[in-house]
Length: 334
Image (cartoon, rainbow, N blue to C red):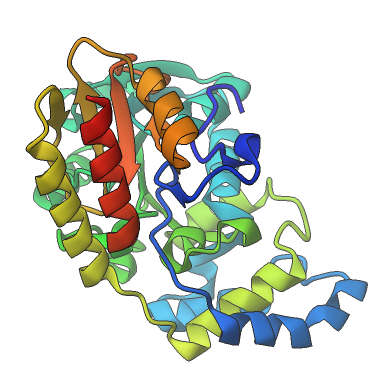
């Protein structure tokens, strides 16, 4: 990890009342999942499946794709590093600002990097690999699907990676998974961590044409998905855990509207449950420190995102009660 991340709650043990710094949605306790995992604890005394085969089979069935078009990973982050390794030394474009692990993984594997503000600005003829986060972190925006399809179809020599980790948290159209597996130059990233709010278990997956999955899988470690993560994934898929996306998005909209009324604060549009804000003539680090010390609230200082500066911060909507605390605290500080 070169650039660093948000959700640094571990640095403030016992002091944080509400965490807005992570893009994980607000979630109630999941006692059924906890109880189920308690019954699976004896499995920790044996090795897990080398490639999480049973979870992969179940997942592929739910998605309507061949097993050969799916690869289960230790969070979406493992998938990012596998792709960077499979395309080692490539000429690579990244649309920024965005998740820093694309850049970090590519630097480790000697990619030649170029950065662009918009997908349509990329000179595809000179690129082997393109990374686009959609919905994008940290902006929350979703790119037009017709634009993306046109890019992929017009540039068969370039491989496009679309990170759809937040695809479950938008009403905008993103890539259809079964259709996407028909493209030989398209890879999709997904996150069960984000979908089910289980970041501590680390669970993600790739979907792509079977040839791309076979190539990427050559570089993966055996047993990278631990047995409890795999069991949680199967349980959640089988039990169709409730995902209150609409409630989450409605609360994010309410939070945005309230913050937009605060003078000295710019709130940027979003298509999902998190969004960027910018302070006028003040630093986000100072606001972050105040919120922690005075209220026990944690936001994401976005200064280390490429293309942003020290005035930016990111918020992920939480419960109505927690969001009200944040609104009041920011008003008081400004």
